[in-house]
Image (cartoon, rainbow over all chains, first blue to last red; front, side):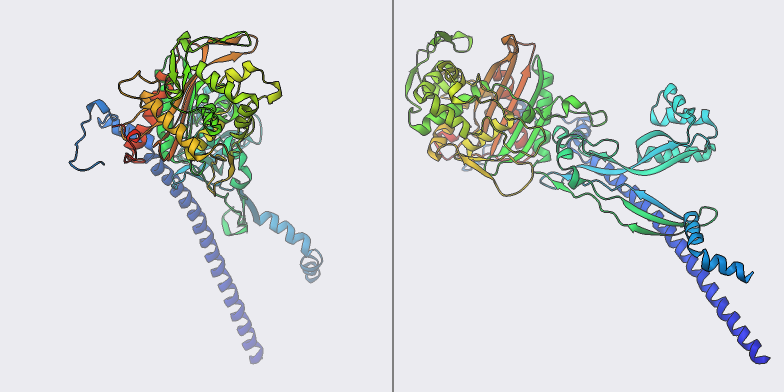
Amino acid sequence: MALVITVGVLVAGLLFLYLWQGAVLSGLRAQRAQILLELEEVERVRLDLAYQVDRAYSLDEIALRARALGMVPFDEERTRYLVLEGGSH
Amino acid sequence: MVGRLVQLQVVEHHHWATVAQQIQEDVIEIPAQRGPIYDRNGVPLAYDVPAYEIALDGYLLTKPELLISLLVRELGMSAAEAKDKVYRTAYFTWLARGVDYEVGQRIRAQAESLGIKGLLFFDSWKRAYPQGPLALAVLGVVGVDGNGLAGMELLFDEELSGRPRRIRLLRGPGGQIYDLWDEDPGAAGKPLHLTLDARVQWICEREVARGLGTYPGAERGFALVMDPGTGEVLALAHGPAVDPARPDPALLHPWSVTHVFEPGSVFKALVGLAAFDQGVITPEETFSGDSPILVQGVAVKNARGKSYGTITFRRAMAQSVNTVLVQVAQRMGIARTHAYLARMGFGEKTGIELPGEVNGILNPPEKWTELDLAVTSFGQGIAVTGIQLGAAFSALANGGTLLRPRLLPGPAEVRGQIASPDACRTMREVLRYAVNPDPNGDPSLGTAADVPGFGVAGKTGTAEMALPGRGYVADHVTTGMASFFPWDDPQYMVLVVYQTSTNPEFWSGSTAVPSVGEIVRGMAQLGIVRPYAPTTALGRSG
C-alpha cells in the first residue's frame, strides 16, 4: 500500500512538474510572441523615422530651409574672386 | 468514457486536430518590402516605408457619424465620399490604402478612444521618395498593389518585388497570441543601384523647371548629363516634374527616350565630324555662306535668311550657317553621310534600361533625295531621341567610341567606332570655338553656355516642328544644345532640349544654351566639378 501511495505521489509530482514546466514554457512563448510583435512595430517606427530623416536631408529641403534662413542662390555678378599670385586654381 | 476518449483521441484524431488548428492558429501575410533604389553614391531615391491599409466591416461598425468625421479630418476625404463608404452594407469595404504610418496610428488611437468598432487595420508598405520628385520620370511609380507601373520600377519589377512573409500565430480563446513563428520568412526585394548622381539630377531638374518657368512658351524640356568615357547617365531630368502624390501618367514617360524630335542645327556637329573623318573638309576651309541655295529647285535658307559671304567652316559652325553644311554634306554624298549617321546609332534603339524606347527615324539611303541630304545636314528631315543624340555626342567627346548609355553600373559596352580620335578632336576644337569664339570676331550662338575655367564646347540648334498635314509650323519649335567639358578631355556630356507650341521666337541661344551654362555652374557650386587647368590656348577661357 505504501509503495502504491509512494508511486502515486511520485507520478503526481512528475505530472505536476510537467504541467508546471509546460505552463511556464507557454507563458514564455506568449511573452516572446508579444515581444516579437512589438519588435515588428518598433522596426516600422524606425523605418518611418529614417524616411523623415532622409527627407529632411534631401537637397530640396535643404534649399528650402536655406532660403527660409535668408540665403540666396549663387549670383555671379555679386561674387568677387581672389587672384592668387602664381596659382592657376 | 474510455471508449469516447479512444474515439476522439485515436479514431477521429486527425479531424479534431484540424478543427483545433483552425480555431487556434492563424496565418497572416505581410507584403514584401519592395527593393530600394539608390543613386551612384548610395543616396536613396525610392524605398518602401510602413503604411496602413484600412478597411471596414460594416456589420461590426459602431458610431458611423464619428467615423465619418474622423475620415474627413485625417484622410481629407469629402463628407459625401466618407458617407458612401461608411454606410455601404458590406462585410468588407476598403476605406483607404497606402495610408501614411503616422496617420494610420492616429486613426487607430482615435477610433479606440472614441469607441468606434469595425475598423480593420492591415500593415502594408508604401513607396516613398525621400528626395521628393527627383528623377521620377526615370524611376517610374508603383501602383497600390506594389507593382511597378512605369520607368525602372516597371522594367525591374521582378527584381524589386520580394516574396511576402507568412507568419503563423497560435491564439488563445480570447484571441490573445500565445506563440508565433515564420512559416515562410519571405524575402525583401533586391536593391537597385543606378548610375544617376542625385546632386547632378537635382541641378538638372531645378534648371529645367527654371527654364520652363522663365522662357516664354516653353512647355517641356529635358536635360541629360552623361559620362562620355563610360556611357553612364548621371542625370536625366524631365520637365514638367511629376508629383509623386498624384503622378500624371502623361509625364511618367521619359520623353527623351520615348519620343522623337528633329534635332536641328545640333546635328551639324555630327555631319561635320563625318566630313572631318573622311578628310573632305578642314576647319579653316572657306565656303559660301550666302542664302538661299537651290537644291532640286527648292530654296534652302539660313536662319532668318541671313547671308554670310565667304566664311570658314569653323565660323560657319559658330554662326550655325545652314548653307555651308549643305555644301559639306553634298561633298560627302548620300551613301557616306547615311552610313555615318547609321554608325552613330540613329534609327535604332540605344538599349538604355528604360521601357518604351523608340528607334527614331532614319530613312534608308535609297529613299533619300539630294534635298533630304541637304536638310539632314542641319538636322531636319530626321527624327532622333534625346538619348541617341546624347550617346552620339558622348562618342564625339570620348574620341569616337559609341557606348551604350546606361542607368545601371557595369563595364562600358562598346557599340562601334563612329570616327577617328583625330577627327573627334578637330570637331571638339571647332565646338569649343562655337562657345568661346575669337573675342574680336562676331559673337557666337553658344556663348551663354561658357563658364570660365571649364572649357565648355558644344553646338546649338533650333528647329521648327513638322505637324501632320501642316508641314513645318513657325510657333512649334524645338531648341537644344549638345555640349561637353572640358573640350580637350571631356568628362561630362550635357544635352538640354526644350519645346514650345506657341512661340515662333523660341531660340536655342536664349533657352537651351543658358541652361547648359547654369547646369555647369550648378555642378561647380556643389563641388562636383572644379575648373580645369589649361592645356592649350583654346582651352582657357577665363
